[in-house]
Image (cartoon, rainbow, N blue to C red; front, side, top):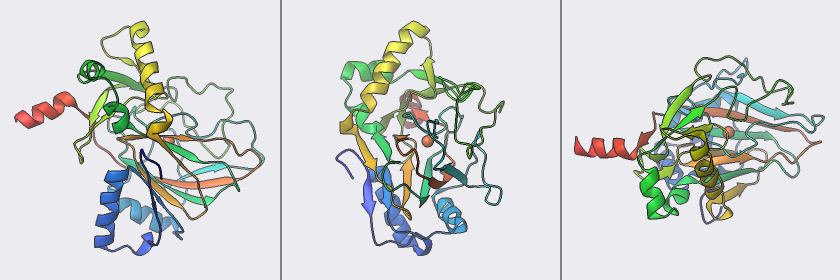
Length: 285
Ligand SMILES: [Fe+2]
């Protein structure tokens, strides 16, 4: 899709993919971070079954799931909902405030606007690799505090207008707390290092004051999303995208007021992020 990341895939029927086909898809997933698979006809059951081939599903705190399909979140904005905040409308890694953030998500386009509503992705391996040796040395051992309360660092105030289809549940103990994650994350499959901070959930750097931490995080947030590290996914209905939440961030562009957009999202469970020090300890053991 772009120099940085993303692969377009045609001619695959995800509902009937055999073992060899799935193995190839997995390899492409780890190499390209984001797969954009065109022209699917998936029932919700098939969408969930495909998700489970990548790993166990996980339910996300805060967000209401579909009544009839408990593993699916319907991400919907109606045509009459204008000037509202939508889901994922800032650069982030999904639910990074959890002890075990999701490994990835599968987003299936059921109904998309004639234009707009794209999703942007950023390659966090490249973001890390592009840093100076001095910055890498400083960041490698550090941890950052992530928080979901009260839904991200900037918060969802009582008067913020969000889509009526997105039920945000408040006072969820697994989200309303702070959690420490390494700033430099070692990917458990590829072994590559990725920057793991994001503007929605990363509050500050452990062991630093707020004032010291803020400019460093601001620099990293801006550094990570320069155009050279990103790609842009333009949806058609029937498209399915899967991304690796451990080494890619994403951003849902909210530029389609007046048009309806309906996506179904499933989530694959992840593991506790491993840092550079954990990797060394594992290597020494
Ligand atoms: Fe997201």
